[in-house]
Image 1 (cartoon, rainbow, N blue to C red):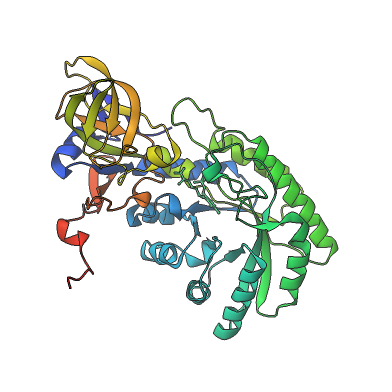
Image 2 (cartoon, rainbow, N blue to C red):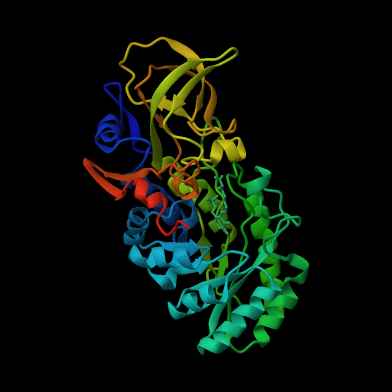
Length: 415
Ligand code: LLP
């Protein structure tokens, strides 16, 4: 559930009219709802119940400092994939001892940064990375806490670009190799084995693949114990899907309880969750203005001021996101439109074949845009990145100013 909805035919975020935000702050612009972010994070945290657990929000889904600070205040942990994300977490007041560091290509500098800030764990993706972490830990005179990311070889049945737990994917270590890698890790003095982790993909709409992956990890945990290697935590990754259109993913409660139930009798093993999309997607919208309506030979186009540089999901994954007017009281003729941006690419669309009752100058909201929205934005076509705004009840807080034209060439030079 989220806190976006119509009141007297005007779309609101909590107690604020989105039309007012569009007029005051301009478009395109992202708007997040603080109450929705909190509600979603707490759903995971509460459903895990008494089982020792930590919800580590996946920063890559939305790394705005305002968003991270809301989660930090709840006591959230964070799943990061770069030194940049670690510094964002710290700036937002996050606790580094609740940070897990994922990603296949951690540099020596990023590893050193993680060690200096005493992060909770490095999620190791390959034997070569294990060596690198060990070497950096020796150089820093530290002991690095590690977990091995195991590839459970489970089909997440999601878009191929966001499926990560198959043998053909670049992530993690094969199950068959895992015990040997753990044994080797145990022999390195500057490493401390803490846990095991996996992440099988994103936008999953069923519980079964998660439970399959968990069961495979539990078998491995028992095998490790027989080898004298005891783990302190089990990190099940992220990946819980959301409703964009007519998907019916399990509610975070249902998903978390299913996982926690499987862990009965293993109370000494802390559970870690890494949700990103399930917390942020429906906690944000992208506001855009209709610039022109254009009738083509075969199609009608609504040319809007948001484009693929602002929201790339439709262009990159053929993703469907709902597009709705901010004001339904206006009298308009209805027609079917392709909603497209001003960028010079045929792939620059936000939605195709949408029935809308609109005119030039009207405002629209693209829903479910809080995750993998602004974070994937670029300056393609020398377009300024959009503003980001947080609504907290009746308060409007600009959490990122719209870029200015001068920002576009900062750091460049003319010969
Ligand atoms: N943990 C790890 C190790 C991950 O790689 C990811 C996402 C997550 C957690 C969070 O997954 P989530 O709960 O958000 O599904 N840009 C794509 C999604 C890429 C996801 C990459 N990894 C999209 O817009 O659909």
